[in-house]
Image (tube, rainbow, N blue to C red; front, side):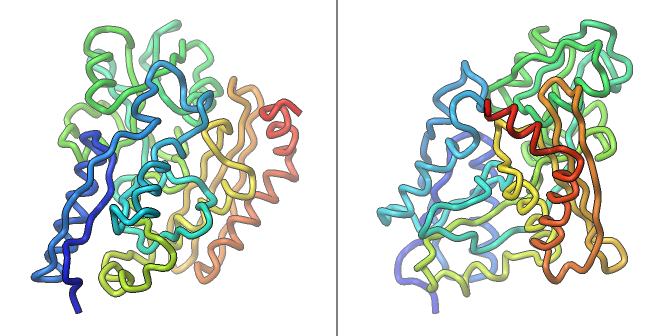
Amino acid sequence: MLPDRPLVIATRESALALWQARHMRDRLMALHPGLKVELLGMTTQGDRILDVTLSKIGGKGLFVKELEQALQDGRADLAVHSLKDVPMVLPEGFALAAIGKREDPRDAFVSGNYRQLSELPPGAAVGTSSLRRESQLRARYPHLDIRPLRGNVNTRLRKLDEGQYAAIILAAAGLKRLGFEERIAAVLEPEQSLPAAGQGALGIEIRADRKDLEPLLSPLHHAETAACVRAEREVSRQLGGSCQVPLGAYAIMRKGELFLRGFVASPDGTAFLHSEVAGSPENPESLGRQLAQALRSQGADAILAALSGQ
């Protein structure tokens, strides 16, 4: 039974967010002939504040609060997010109704003059918006000059082209979705740069009381991606993951098992703890908790306490 009015998707107005919302709109209309879906474009606080790193202004949750308010007051029925931008604990009254099939989860090395990270000379400026990426770069390439990089994908590429950076690191998924795949000089394997929890996957958020939406959204749910992302997000949830914590978590399915890797580091990369676990995908959160405990046994709590100023 289709609703008697159009569904409204709340979305940020960046090019990438609009692509993601339109992608889900088109899939919904293809799955449910006759369904009408509209977009409600919004500018979030995270989009407005561009001169300060996310870790200093409250983290990636700044990209979703206004969208959740639109859900709360009935202006929108659902919101489409990059899952790596979604806080690990949703506010009371909200739920992730579907997790779509994952695009490339890896980080991408983008440069006009160099083909890979190892070619960069000492002092070369590398731009990234992420403490996770920064800590891994500093641990592996201490001779590079890691600098903050904010703005949407087009803005970041423009800053690179203007010569402000020798290279920048972006999510491969965003570049591919926007048609910039040719700008990728090299894709960084997880061994080089472990992705963020949920990177490359899209999530659909609704109000928890909107049970009427579940039949419409369930065909968009990809079970394998969801199991991997649930494990990754649990690692981050257990360790207080946010933009203030250099943390990565990445899971894949391999021969029926879920294989999960993760790390916690100091921002300068001098302390770098990593571990991995494998097990049944039936309870991905339990694997996330196992990995978090393994990192704690190596001393993660000391890193987390230092980051929080305790």
